Amino acid sequence: MGKLVHYMKLEVDEKVLVERVLLKDRAAFEKLIRQYEGLVFHIVMPLIKHDNDREDICQDIFLKVYEKLHTFQFRSKLSTWIGNIAYNTSINFLQKKKNLLLDDVFKSNNENSSAMYENSIAENEPPNPEGILIVKEERKLLEAAVEKLPPIQKTVLLLFHKDELSLTEISRIIEMPVNTVKSHLFRARKSLGEILLQH
Image 1: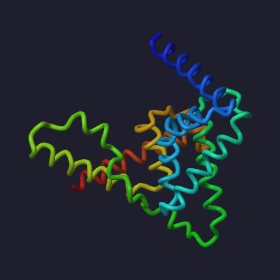
Image 2: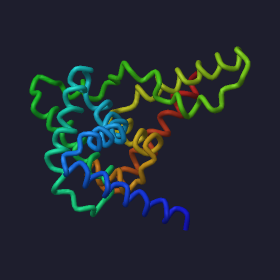
Image 3: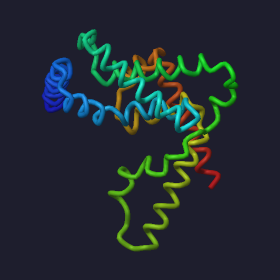
């Protein structure tokens, strides 16, 4: 019951936000960006190699969101719709960049992930300095392990664990069957486990 109430409240909040943006409310659009920039980054980051390109693509994505928002019919969550725009924009960018080798796409390429798991781990940090050092070391190992994953696995992992999206929502965003998403998530977790066990 609580989940249903939360979902309905979320739906109402989304509708109000969309309506305000469509009325050219600048503050509402800025709120929309703040609310979904993490989700967009988790889709763009594993696929796009250079920081400058990522920045341009993220701006392009929110520009498209603004331009196409009037077509959003609330048949899915706003996050799913924005995520799908983010994924397609990233893929289109890669297809247009003819000089980009396929291998480059599958190399780990995030130089800014040091705070990726900050929030989830920070709550459990022991108060003593030695404990904090251990947790920081574990965090570094986890981040390094995530970096070794293929982009699609990294994307699915981040969307599932960081953005807490369901497998169905992720499948709509990256336009793959739910079972394929499940398979990517399983492989990502398995690879992470194997990499971490080596340490």
